[in-house]
Image 1 (cartoon, rainbow, N blue to C red):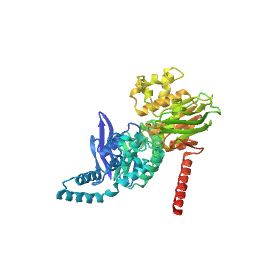
Image 2 (cartoon, rainbow, N blue to C red):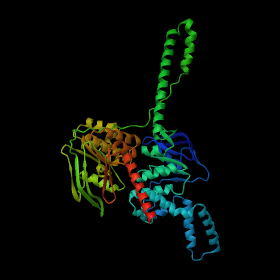
Image 3 (tube, one colour):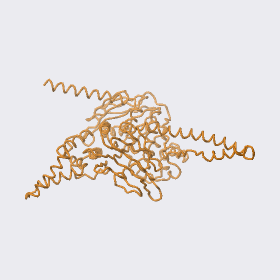
Image 4 (cartoon, one colour):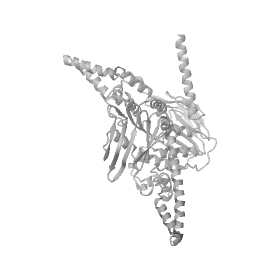
Length: 545
């Protein structure tokens, strides 16, 4: 068990947390939610001991081991992948290193022998002989190929490093597991594997995530941070949302009844306070009036942007035709002879583990990259807006937000432009902020403003939910659902894909394509059945051999 006791954290004059008391118990998975800036990651750092409180303390059941998902992707660059995972259990790794050092000695003494036997006993007690196979199992589950297990971390790309650090956090059955955005940069297969792992995990998990489907799947409780307090709810994310909304409605209804009673009492007192025969009753009602307390209903710190893509013109029947498209990047053929036709009602989710293939296809369709072979043709009634996965160059300038968006606006009017920025929560002085200094989430909201102001009827979005908070993801999700045009997108948010897409295209390793007109859940169900059939057939052939 881990608990926060009267925890207060002040940053300057601002209290980020005020007298927080909460217990996280064994066997439960807690989703830690709140608006951007509410302090989710900060609270995890307090729980892990990385950050000191202004007041109060954190207690952990004696003897329990706490594990944290680290965010520094370069910290272990000089280490072998398998060793990095095993470092998740620091004591076990120390024993392994000390044992190796003793056995490597040329002048092996009797004292060394005694120490080695002590270490071997502790090593066996900690299931050390299974350490490498357990680490390999975690890596394989997350999609890190066995051939990479003996590589150095510095030789892995960013997405693989994320998976290794996640495996490190999960390694060795920790008693308390703290995960800050564990699904970021994971492919959908890895997310599904992690969901199953956490569902079966028997100890304490506290997780911060913007993935609503993930929170619904794994969480037994939701810890909601709002205005420096943490309110605990039993149930998953959807249950929290319904419960919190119900509580607000009940408080408003109760206040309405109290206000009606107050008005009734005030009218009686006003009419009869000067009447001698009614003075006793008026006094009695004054006392009753003093006892009525309205429930304090504080507005949530959560803010939802308003995302509404309105095409300037209706899209025709001919939207996009792709024929025999191929592209090689860095010696790897990421697209191989792709052909497909997009219809005017299509909202297509591109899925698959090859992130580079999706980004490359989108860059070609957006006109930012030339294919090696093949062609693509947009219909004459179409207009496109593109959301790139990497927007670094877009914001590498000293323009203010207003000036930056005005450059893309068909109407060069500041009031008109500020209207779009206001929808995306850039109010007042925010408009004069330099785009160079914006946070990741602010940059995403700027790009979505740019797409809205374009009036395009075909949207291409490459991982648009990265860096967004839950409220912005929900707003974007709803905006795309009601968008009357065509959308081609890649996204790791399961609920986003399921509720938006009516067609799924999976880009396969080696550059191929599977194209299905279906929902995402139906696609996954059919894919799972196909895998089971493949395994069954393989096993049957083995039995016959």
